[in-house]
Length: 232
Image 1 (cartoon, one colour):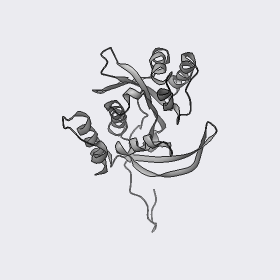
Image 2 (cartoon, one colour):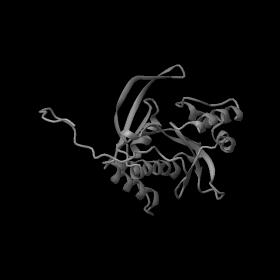
Image 3 (cartoon, helix red, strand yellow):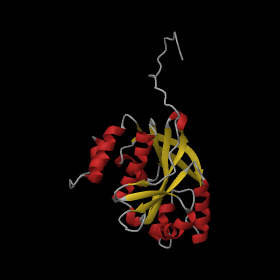
Image 4 (tube, helix red, strand yellow):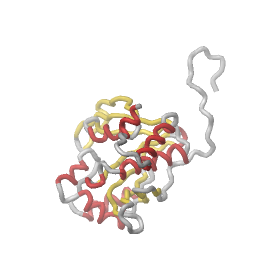
């Protein structure tokens, strides 16, 4: 602890007993269920959702892997994802499908997990074209934010993307993240330069963002714009 200093310092952060990483468990909402990635079970539907069509394969443009030559190649990659704890991967299931979990339509993950600093990033996110611009995306992120802020009591959740990825940047703002800047020449991905756009949400932002997300997801109001709610 600092003492007898005339220089400005930040406010005291109350300690948190036993800070923990996100849980590898099922997260269930009204529109989506997030399940721990199971490569063998998930590969057929995830491959079909993201391949054999130019529009589907375009979703890999800003990812570090894919598209894949065939389903076994994708399953091999998914097996490495399943074994990982950081990133911690989940399969996105469309709950409108009435089987046990729903139709598999994408992937999300927690990554750059730093429990001691109560900080995490949401990333490696993709959805099949038919799931994009639906409540599936919004509720997936809502469930992950609830885990981060409400259960884990984290202070900061980050969102990063290629600065050229206009759709991801718009999604971050719509979901309530705040733009923090561009890290120039941050990464080399597939042999290409990547300038990275950084966004974040803090525990101070979360109560209002959570209320906006719940209003947009679950209230019966028509014509609501989540982007406009979060801009306010």
